[in-house]
Each structure stands twice: as structure tokens, then as C-alpha cells.
Amino acid sequence: MNEEVICLENVELWRRNREHFHYDFKRAVFSLVQGKRFKIEKKLVLKNINLRVKRGEKIGIIGSNGAGKSTLLKVICGILSPTKGTVRVRGEIAPLIELGAGFDLEMSVRDNVILYGVLLGHSRQEMKQRLKDIISFAELEEYLPLPVKALSSGMRARLGFAIATSVNPDILIVDEVLSVGDAHFAQKSRKRMEELWQQNTTILFVSHSLEQVKQLCPKSVWLNNGEIAFMGDTEEAIQRYLDYIGLNSSGKNRLC
Amino acid sequence: MIRLEKILFSKQKNAWQKTLLRYWDLLSVLVPQTLHARYRGSYLGVYWSLLNPVIMTGLYTTIFGAAFASYYDNSLVNYVLAAFTGLLVIHFYNASTTQALTSIVYNGELLNKIKIPIDIFPLTVIGANIVQFLIGPFPILAIITLVKSQSILHVFLLLIPFISLVLVCTGVGFIVSALFVFFRDLGYFYELTTFILWVSSPVFYPPEIVPTQVKPFLNFNPLVAIIESLRQISLTPDFPDPVYLLRGIFYGIILTTLGYIFFRKMEPEFLDLL
Image 1 (spheres, each protein chain N blue to C red):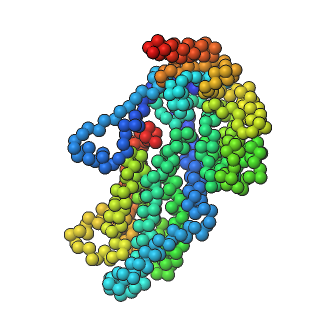
Image 2 (spheres, rainbow over the protein chains, first blue to last red):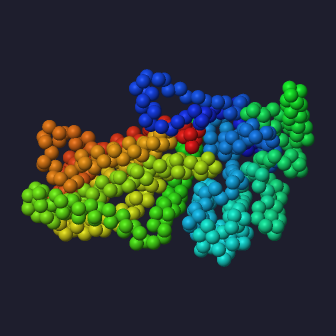
């Protein structure tokens, strides 16, 4: 029961500075001819991250913009691999991030369900079996043969939500989206989220709404400048985070 | 000890099967998606891809046909067929590698959001071109082969140069798609490269007119051997020259291996630049 499903050990991530890269073959050849040395500039985005999450834990992740929250999630999802350290994840991850990022607007709703599901890592067979449930949950039965571009943005979000939550994932990564669509569907999706919350699903919840984090997660991680500044009781994490922001701005005020 | 090894081995095998299955599933949704996007759902659209080689064959025949017919047993038909088969190869190569070039960058946003093996995108391009070839030009090629060689065996033999061609394109596709992540102006330079390959392949001229001093260099062009064996198989009743067959396969395997190694080496850098 208490097995660890996410384990990050001494994770460090360096990324290239994209703004200094010119993507230009001509210039690369010229500077090579001129004998200029090609320098790769990298910056440290995640520093010494140690994170252990047990099955069923609900963990909030807070921090200011650019603190590395999304990057950390990308490392956990396996999109980015760390420069140093190890990442171990047990079980299936469902990212509820930017729902519908893989939709092909020209293709039918039916084909998109299969496409998106396969992109998320499910088998085609599985998706075909689940198609009916997904469509009926999203309440898009009559749109099945239509291209996705015929759907409104709310409907697309509904479809994305329905696909991403159709499996019972072991680990759920939630980025702000807790309810989508109109009032009716928002209630429905909130209910499904609550179900997932009550099951033994491990949840990582990234949000700028500290109130929501307080309500939903007993434990939290405060990320600051790519480091875990605090991990533990949510109340305390939020308190420290707020104190830090307050300190910063009062410091600035003093300078003024 | 032995049991442990067995467990480890079966685990490894499972991982292999899983990866293979994942690639297969991805290809089976992404290839139709690519074809669908290209032809907007019309199956006839695939035959558009024949338009280019057919028009080019007509053009070459009009201009060079009379001058070069003497190299093809004084038969204009033979020149037409030689030009057409050569163009099919060139066209496949140009289309698949040029589409592969941009494939990773086009899907950069998606790669930043969902975990997908990156090499699936150049592979999808190659896959889509294979399907298109099998529906469009292949039946015509098979009919030509049956008529000219009078042998079913030759229709099956067509697969050898075709597989070589696919391997060459896969390898080149890996390399150019990886390079394009770093150099977005590569399209212009790549156009030049494809043009060189085109002109240095005996597509619209007989290989005999090339000066003997230059000829050995043409063998560096991997498409030359493929075009030659495809022509021998489809246009003559004789068994094709094994040297060309093997050289085609050899180039295919070498390029795919090199391309794959290069791709894997560059891969860790991709996401920082997408």
C-alpha cells in the first residue's frame, strides 16, 4: 500500500538557452569557416530535486511563474530526461494538461478519439472498445462523424477531458483544469475528478489558486527557482510561499 | 541464477514487444492521418501522386526521346518505360525525404506536451509514402513488369529494389529531420542535394553517355543501383544483375544504420530547441 510510485533522486536538469540559438545553417557554416568556436549556453532549470510520492498521495505543487513547475511535470511524464539523477515512475500517467493538444481538426471525432488515445499511450484496440463510453460521457454522440473543427472550444475540451480520464490512471497530473465546459458538464467533470480523487489515484496538482490546493491536497511542494524550497504540510508550504513573496515585494518597496 | 536470468530475459523480451507494439499502434493512426491530411479523404487523391511522374515522363520523351531512342533498341516505348521507372524512384525519394525533413519540427508542440517517441514522425512520413506507392504506382509497375518480363517471379523481385529504396529514404529521413531541428534554413540546401541526386541518376538519359572517368563517381549515388535493378527487373526477361541488387540493399542498410545512430545521438538535444 505504501509503495512509492514516483521517485526522483538528485534530479538536475540543464536546458539550452533557446534565445541564443539562431537555427541558421548559413551562419553556422560561416562561423565555422571563420574559426569561431561554437558555444552552447545552458541554464540550470531544476536543481537537486528529491521527491518521493507514495501511492494514493495527493500533492499540490505551488510556486511563481518560471519556478519550474511545468518542467518538473515534464520530467515526471518522461517528456524530458534529467541531465543528472534518476527518475522512477511506476504505473500509468494521465496528464490532464492542455486537453486536446493532439487533435487533428480535419478528422472526425471518432478518429480523433482513437488518435488522441493512442498518442497518450493506449493501444488502438483499447480505444476502439472505449470509444462509446468516451463519446457518451462527452455527450457528443451526434457529432461522431463530424470533423473536430465543427466542435466549439468547450466541446473540444469536453472531448479531451473524457479521453484523458477514460482510463483509471495510476498517476494523474492536473494543471489547473478541474472542470471544463458549460455548467452542466462542469459539474459532471468535477464529479469524475472527485471519484478519481477518492480512489487510490496518485495526484499531482499544479495550481495558482492556493485556495484550491489547500482544499484538495494535504501535502504540497513549493518550487522556487528550480529547487524544492519546502515540502510537507500544505498550510505551511503556502505560508512560507506567501511570506517569501511578501518579503520579496517589501524588499523591493524598501529599495524604492 | 538461471531462473533469474530467465525472468530478466522474458522481461526484456516483453519490453521489446511492448515497444514494437507501441510503434505499430502509433503508425497505424498517424499514417492514415497523414494521408488523410494530404488528400482530404478522397481515395482518388493518391493517384495525384502519379501525375508528377507521368507529366515528367511525357516531357522527357518529347525532348530527349528521339535523341536517346537509339540506346533503347531504337524504341521510343522503351525510352518511355525507362524514364518512367527511373522517375518513380526519384519521386519517391524526393517526396519522402523532403516531407521527413520538417516532420519533427512540425510536431514540436505536440512533442512538448505528450510523451511520444520522436522518431515516429520521420517513420510516419516514410510509412505514408509506402502506402501511397503501393496503391498508386505499384500496380502499374507490376503490369509493366508482367508484360515486359513475362514472369511472375519478376513482380516479386520488384520488392528488393523497393525495400532498398525505403531503407535509403528512412536513413536519409532520420538524418535530415534531425538536422532540421538545428538548422531551419536547411530546406534550400536540401533542395540542391536532391537536384544533384536527380541529375546524377540516369533517369532521362542512358547511363552509356556518361564519360567513363565520371562513371565511378555516380556509383556513390545510392539511387543509381536501385534504378538500374528496378529497370532490369521490370523491363527485361533476364535475371537482374546481382551486383546492383546487393549494392542497393547494402546502401539501404548502411544509410538506415548511420541515420538511426545519428538520430539517437542528436535526440537528447531536440526538445530544448523545439
